[in-house]
Amino acid sequence: MTRTDQDTWDLASSVGATATWVAACRALAGKQAGALIDDPFADPLVRAVGADFFIKVLDGEITDESGGLDPDADPDVEFNLQRMVNMMAVRTRYFDDFFTDATAAGIRQVVILASGLDSRPYRLAWPQGTVVYEVDQPAVIEFKTTALSNLGAQPTAERRTVAVDLRDDWLNALRQAGFDETKPAAWSAEGLLMYLPPEAQDRLFDAITTLSAPGSRLATEYHRDGMPLLEKRAKAMAKRWGQFGFDTDVSALVYHGERTPAADYLSAAGWEITARTRADQFAKAGLPVPPGEGLKALENHVSVIAVLR
Image (cartoon, rainbow, N blue to C red):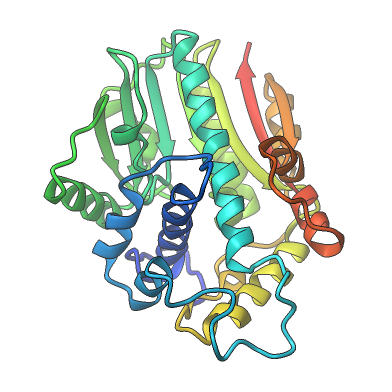
């Protein structure tokens, strides 16, 4: 499915399917010995989406050793399932720790952009008085809210949904939901930037900067060497998992073109930057760091925490 300026999706198609894939990996990550994360809502949310491929992954019917795998495929390619699970584990832990640290420092308003199937408003231990704003397309917000309600889940913070596409006037929608520009906020843009055109990425950072009081924090991630390597990896992912029913080609969903690295753009806008590669995150977590192309891919992926002074 090729992107268009006003395309929409549910959680079984297009960009939405990638959010479900990530949630499935979080569910599997939480079941591992010595798990880095605990997301008890990931499994039931993925099952509620109802897509056969993801349910089979959760049930162990589709694995790296599944029959029918391309005999020429390298079992250690980046998009083998275990490595994807590890990637989502370290990514999730990074953003979990970001929010924990931000609220420990006194920040009491949080904004999760393109929240997808993220369940942090329900599973993190938020300090009293914390307000968490979730911003995403209306259909995605409605699905998750209903599914979690059906599970009997209760938010652990004051959860306010902002059902708006980030291509529309989400700033005023956020303001209307009660966001206070005079107070610092903790923002996340997780797994988002590659789905934005370069100029839209800049506009997003400009908007966040406009709305942020001094002391605000932002966590995001980007690909240091641009999109060519990402596109190569996405096509490998489509080939590997397409034979089992995952019919989403991520390479058709991302936007290409020259873009300013997130760390550079935010630094120029007055944010103080701390960056870490995913390879560093793997090593810190005690996870195996692959050699060759796998290592290159992990080093290409940079996680950023920015603080507005």
